[in-house]
Length: 532
Ligand code: GLN
Image 1 (tube, protein in one colour):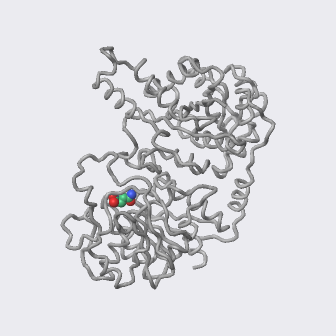
Image 2 (spheres, protein in one colour):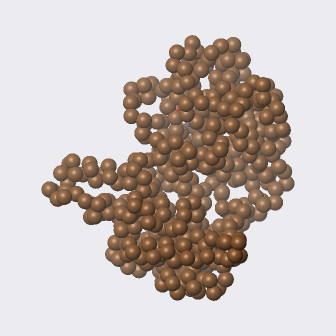
Image 3 (cartoon, helix red, strand yellow):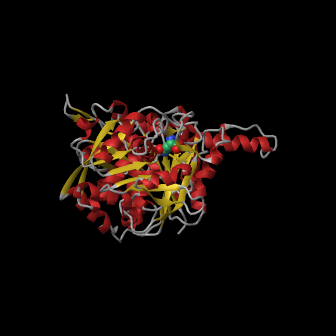
């Protein structure tokens, strides 16, 4: 079958869940046996979100091929259980960079380089790139931002042109909000009408409208929206608030979103999506037998999106264990030796989060110490692993002032240090150790028990690394390097002997956790937390 293109645009406000909608539709199509991929176009000028503070857009998600991407790509992978790549996330910065490079090379043969057609052609090329691979029945493209934003205009124009060129092989789904006014007890359609008008002004007629709502929408309301927006009544569907994002595919199935899409493409709708695995996950997730309290210690905890993949990994790993994981968000800057015991005393497990820079580091070290000395299951991820190394150096090996050279360049004991290849780098964007690397797993360890295999591939995003120079001193005191990079010999993971479960990993296990394939390290950690 020739590739079909589905564009998802948003109106009225941001944060309506375009990413979850795209992922849910993709899931339903995948469950009907189609191959599907999802792409996100971000209108900002950064080349990628790698240089963005997490407070801006939440977590930076890393793909296997080492692209630093929008957190929606994490949802795509978690829902579809297939990897994404650099091609799945394109920003205005990347589009302009490519056009400007072409201009400098002389590719435009003296033409005036303009937003239309050069920028829009570049956007169209990036959309078609995935379809041209010949692997996908459907390419779903989510346009970031809200219709009406100045910076979204070239994307909407590219969608208009593609829809015109592709005819019956493309359709547009527009996601809007139907607010409920509690004072008058009414659901209001006007914002939706206005947002469709804004799309129409740009020449795009949506084929399907998805209306986010807190209350069920009546038939007459849907009819009204259909009439005012030139959309068939059947193609006006509601997306009601649900308790977990993983229920959205089922809600969209109830609303027949997948059937409507297939009908519009003249594709058969006789089969039903196979969602047994998905339902069994939801069932376990909703009916837990145990509960654990896990502290997530980080410096961006006010914004939970900054740790999106970690929070989702706990949902996946919790479901496997039939265990509800309550995350306690603990601000590392507020922790100190005086309050650490009081703050962490009721927790069954402690996770120290990834991060950059020195803010909150001492609080993280206190949390590590508390977990180590009190036999509380501990997982340190990336910076969380690095602070666990620092804590061990300072408090077990007596190396006072031991540090990472990221925090203190002049430290006497640089137990975490810049990797050799990083020392010459001056540009900050896209230059970390990024993407999936192999790691050999030492048999006979808790780490091996978790993964049950001798080699794993996990994703990285860091510049600093355990300093091998100190390894023998660490080993003498019960620090076991259990995960080693086969090419460089770098320590990717360690565990502590004489502790029930204490593991630090230089990589990010959270990026590879999906609903159907929870990350084994998270599964083992949750288990360790409830068996205590
Ligand atoms: N700041 C640390 C480094 O660059 C850790 C990075 C992280 O936690 N992702 O190595």
